[in-house]
Length: 179
Image 1: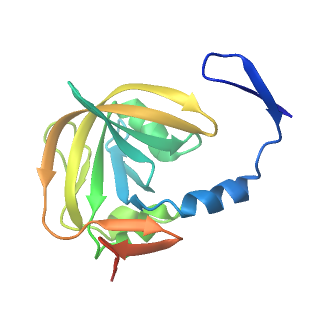
Image 2: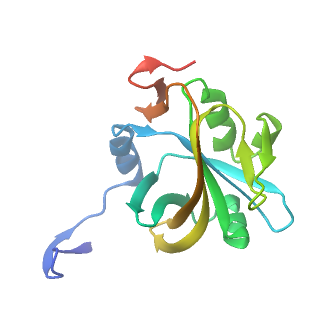
């Protein structure tokens, strides 16, 4: 049993935990934009992953968050470098999303990219409707993930339709099939 507390900290109810597969199935019904998070380790080796757990936090200063699995190589490199980029994928980039979602392989071999002038982190060329370059402003552990807060220091906007992921499918905003 898990003890659950109400908003003011009083014990509200005892509850069983939901199974991870049930939670995953529930979350598949909540469509989200698709991003890739990129960074480099101290030696300049690029790392990256596909991420749908991404959100704006605030505007003063401009801050966003990404949630990365605590065992992620990208998270280790990001913490080492202290900087990262979030690329919002365009609807024609399902192959890019899939490449960055694989645990093995080198996604940087299949996309055009260059190190940023500011931090030397990978910035993907094309395939995006925009990106934000960030410095790590903090992090906190949450379940089997780490929430990383990034202060946005540069942005770039592109054209095209953003990609959305829901019900385990990539689609074009607002619901046109992705290629």
